[in-house]
Length: 443
Image (cartoon, rainbow, N blue to C red; front, side, top):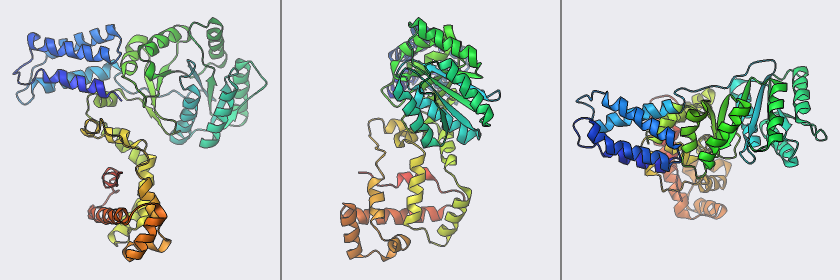
């Protein structure tokens, strides 16, 4: 995500390398490169021009400390201005009313239904609320089935009226159902529509008026770039939505929509989504995104992801086993499972400062643990509990059972032993999952 933009911005800062101070003359070329980088990333031209003008004003009015180089000062100014451009601070979802109603709108194919499931999962798991999903897309039969499948995956009830073609009526009936069954949050998935389709725009406007949602979210595909921004503006003129959701950030996106959309429609980006998994949804933090765009990583989000998988009781037991030198392959599998639950491995790595750039052209498959898991699952329960008993003949059997070689089994045994020693040396606290990940074998 944003790799090309990151590279080009870094090059623009290097222009100031060796300069003693920032002047209007030596900053001109750097600003030109920054503007070009933003436009290449599909940022709205007027937004890019206003942005660089603001950076110039801030930079020329800034006293450069002797301990700070002009290029470093420029990086900080651009970082702060990027964060401000994308909203400045995080904007949380409003859940007001009994029940609180969230209306989901957007173009066809933007990922509304999948997002509705992800949002229901987030509200249920992180806010502890009882959620009802409403199938309000009466034009695409598959949308109802898709929402039912998602509801089953996350344990959330889905309200449907398959024979009713009136989405306003369906939503109103769903809200009554939620009140009766003590469900305090209703998420209404709607049909995709085009801004030029007057009948469909009237329908979504009438739907909003009828259900008076506490939050109306506009879902847009990040890969559509400036088209996403233009569509958001047209929808906002009609719907006056409360926030924007960018989906498919794991695709071939240049980042222009994420940077431009707040400035164009003056509505906050509230969520970003990538992948199909129900936990692949993040609250949008402008400061953290600015850090990631500039290659500074996002340690705060990484720690938050780790904490979501952190089980205090399990950590206490694990620490006790480590002290007694009883850490075994069953524990090893548990640690692998925690890392996998944190999300896409390359995305996780990109949150570590400096690592994202190093891994730019490296493919890290989510199947990276498959060989390790296959080898461990080929062991007997006794062997997993007592790795030291695995001799030559056992290694051969394990290799045959996992479709690997004795050399690969030996490599895992050595890595396991190294990991056990490293974890035992930790002076208390939860084992560092990022260090565990670094020890995992790759194919």
